[in-house]
Amino acid sequence: MAIAAFARAPFASDPALSRGRRYPGSESATRSAFRRDCDRIIHSAAFRRLAHKTQVFVFHEGDHFRTRLTHTLEVTQIARSLARALGLDEDLAEASALGHDLGHPPFGHAGERALDQCLTGFGGFDHNAHTLHVVTSLERRYADFDGLNLTWETLEGLVKHNGPLTDRAGQPVERYRGGLPRAIAEYSRSHELDLWAYPSAEAQCGAIADDIAYDAHDIDDGLRAEMFRIEDLADLPLVGDILREIAVLHPRLEPSRHAHELQRRLITRMIEDVIAQSRREIAELKPDSVDAVRAAGRPVVRFSPQMAAADKAIKGFLYPELYRHARIMRIMGDAEELVRRLFDHYAGMPSELPADWLGGLSPADAAGRAVRIADFIAGMTDRYAMVEHTRIFGATPELR
View 1 (tube, rainbow, N blue to C red):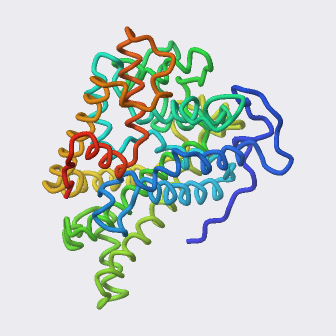
View 2: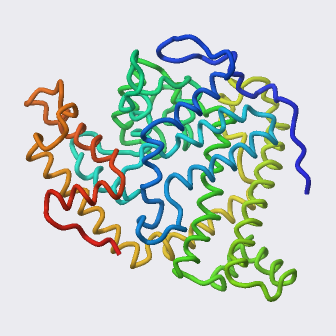
């Protein structure tokens, strides 16, 4: 079906009305505030490093598998498509998508688990919180401030990628009931991000685009890696329907084209569903400003109940068949051990770190030192972590 774009929606974020940046400065004569955020993210070192960080498969598995960078670009394309159809600010949706994975350490969630264990007693490690830390502190490109000095609206989208973090009273909710991650709690004390509210509709586009990309592209990578066969997908809701359509329209389609046709149609169906459901939500809630979206008490950009069930079923299939596959688990187990060994080595011999990474810390500040070591490791690419492990220990697991 054709999807006509709205005129600019009254609840769209307006860069001219942005809440601004933490460090005020001159505005661009040729770019909006949100467009500048996109450009700052794209030119950051953290963004470049995504090219060599694991999505599901470690880099030497092959050149055709997704990396964190290609995943991010795919999420960005979907987020812009959604924002365009809903009359939202495409640049803010893009910024939310471009930055959402900047905090991932090497080896994806395996590296995150390892660093979280290493920081037991020191606040743990959370990649969403680390994304905020990267863009507000660790990137050091500008003469006048640390971080990228992004707009308030982009920061809120990155922090609330999974929705509100607290209730109105400031009590952590959902996955953060045990306490807010250190980086978010510390930053919020000096620059409040309204953690109780939903983010803008543009940021919600970025978040649901992440779900769509995971479903379609991880199916594609799983098929390419021969973790499962296309026939194994036949009973999944939506996916099975698409496969039956393809069989009727293209009965003798070669396997590689079959997989790509499935991916293409799946993305299209999910995007169309989000647009249709979001328009229903908007018609019901009638938000007249971006703040009305934040205070709505539920997302305005979302799947229909039927598509949400299909999304859950797809992830339910991918979890055991791909993410928890014996081969992936073996590799990721070795990767976790590699990251832990690096952390323990630097903790025992902090002089092995670049000099500027421990500057300003007291020798008695064990927590500060542990966090700084985790920050250093989190910035590594898969390849650099493996090279560093070989330099220190003389060998590195093959991760195959």
